[in-house]
Length: 326
Image 1 (cartoon, one colour):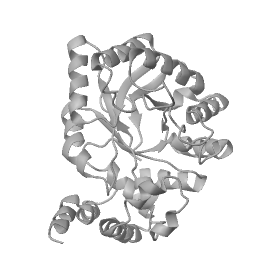
Image 2 (image 1 turned 60 degrees about the vertical axis):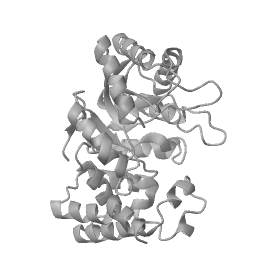
Image 3 (image 1 turned 180 degrees about the vertical axis):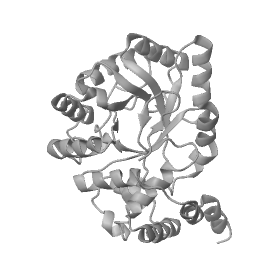
Image 4 (image 1 turned 90 degrees about the horizontal axis):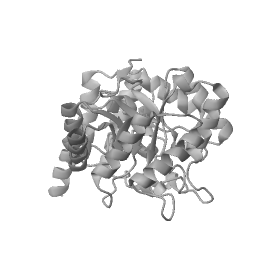
């Protein structure tokens, strides 16, 4: 498994990383501990979480994922072996959102407490906050880095215009910049990353940790038809992939997977990790057997021919042309 440097941070991460949104949600505490043991034991030591995970679940208030991760780290006494990325800014409830200085300074203390650590490796703006001046946000992060509570900062779900604005503010004031971005990117969702975010990452030497590498599970190939997703978490999101292009992608994934005697999920994740501008792809799992899929995906290298087959099958430009003449 090839380890990669994350932008200019000096942090070394595997090409496939664990999305911890499931911790304390679709993976209970016992299963979460088993998953984390398996992944970290195999070298997949980058854990992505957020203070908002999993506030959308009835009865949850946010912070559940961080709390489970913190309990696991405390029980294993392995903080120095783990790279923790968490986020701030997504809505947790009335008055609990945004990227103001006051909110960030309060939210980071809550995250540190739940994670049972005195520092966060990568602290990320979960979503852009158009109501807070960029310089206020970046100054707050600079203060946290100066205090030693945060090592590096990143931005999730930002467009290139806002990334450039944040970098300009940081450079002008001598503050740390966003060293990591976290956009959505997979074989189906390609256009925005490839046309905008990837060129930005390459030209600015920024690390890209792409989420939804399996398109919420669609690219695993385990859903044969739309009826299979009824009652599943995020079924409405999954439903958007059930179309001609989606099934064309699944067919190509299956052909490559069968040729390599691996699973479609492994191929899908390996494809993302091999793309220009990508440091690693993030995927969630809810069982130890699924964790093994991530481990195997991290060790899989696709040939140029296999990558090209998948590029052609998933090409959104070809799809848009087909629709124009339908």
